[in-house]
Image (tube, rainbow, N blue to C red; front, side, top):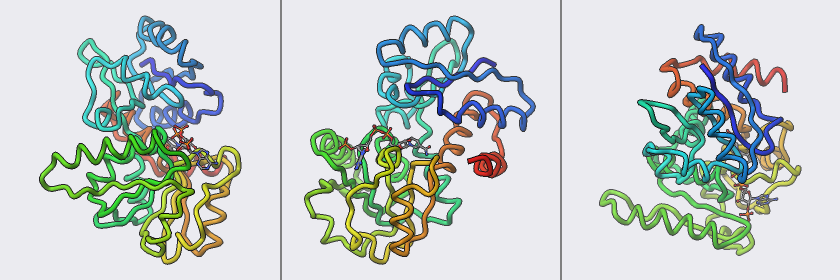
Length: 280
Ligand code: NDP
């Protein structure tokens, strides 16, 4: 089975080793390669991969929105996110899917974090945040507040969701937005059950500009970043008496959900996560 991950940069991707571990566990032969592709190169590289009998792909930064255009059909998750992280060749055509959000929800479950009724602060409004909003609302969070360092794109994302929710009779307007610099979060200090860093700040060893008071009484913080341990956000959250987790578990969980779509097999994610963590 020929699989690949497309992105730029791509050399750092842990996806090949994760999927290889799943394949060993489930007794399958796979070839899973990293394919470096800029947005301009993506279409041609993907066509070459498909012509060479590629049947499944992961898509990462900065190609997730472009991959929408390669999908003849979209799963409800990809439709919600308007972003694709998994391409599946099925019944002669490419299906676009998104496993990021369900991967996050599965990892939060691992840490005993019940989302139902929770007040969640999601910092960041890029592709990662976009992918997790639908699954978190489906998990019945009570209040989802998105805070971002800049406006426009983030405000549009929230407006998009508010419009969708307004059409659903059972949903309250549960998605809100604040600029990180606006100080509006102060009125919600001490009210967050979970604070999630969905920014790429960890990559530059920074953390988003949230005040310490924001975390008052917050028991659990999650950083979607992984790699350098602990991230700047994790260090800061820990210093403010919050239990913390990085995004490595989300990475493995979203990969397992992609693997299931390609093969129908459900791998044991904990074993793979433990092995990956021991090699960080
Ligand atoms: P994008 O480039 O699409 O978005 C980046 C976001 O981070 C934007 O909201 C941006 O704000 C914000 N940002 C960047 N630097 C800072 C900073 N110093 N302070 C505050 N905000 C900042 O990236 P993605 O959304 O695709 O990815 C975000 C992170 O999530 C990455 O670290 C990625 O590795 C991780 N990720 C992890 C996954 C996992 O499985 N664990 C899966 C997917 C992503 P602005 O809009 O103002 O520029």
